[in-house]
Structure formats: C-alpha cells, structure tokens
Length: 113
Image (cartoon, rainbow, N blue to C red; front, side, top):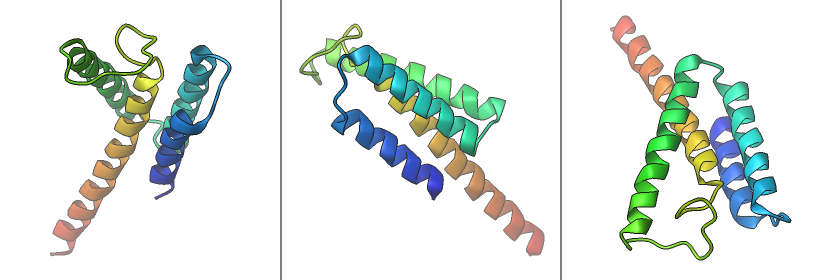
C-alpha cells in the first residue's frame, strides 16, 4: 500500500508542482522514481521491468501523438513531455510489486491445500 501511495504522490507531483523548467521537474521525478524502486523493490528484475515499461510506453505514446490520436499542449521531448518516462518507470515498478505480492499469496495458498 505504501508503494501505491508513493506512486500516486509522484503522479500528483508531476501534475501539480510548478518548476522553473522541465529539466528540474524531470530530474526531480527521476530521483523520486529511483527512490521508489530503491525503497520498495531493489531487484534487478524490478529495475529492468521499470526501464522496459518506460521505454515501450514512451514509444507508444509518441506514436499516438505523432498520428494525432493524442496531443500535448507543450511537448518538450520529441512529441511528449520529458517527465513521462519517469512516471512510466515508477508505474512499472509499482505494478511489478503488486504482481509479486499476488504471486506470493497464490503460492502460499497452494502449499496450504
């Protein structure tokens, strides 16, 4: 639950905090996302999942914007916002932790039966 709360906080920070420029916002969100991974996961697979999700989801988002399906008011990284990969990374880590916890519950139930 704490991991989900931190993820929601990172998402809220990306929308509500006002920084002088997008580089500061991106670096702050990158530090928060790495802090989320370090605090709640610390595994190579979790880090790899986060990087993979961030890369693939950013590419898909760029394709959607390029094809006119979606539009950002002020893109600063090709067609999307520069902080978007940080949000996807922290989301991948959060969902990975949820999946890992659900898998552990199913393993415990099968051992008790």
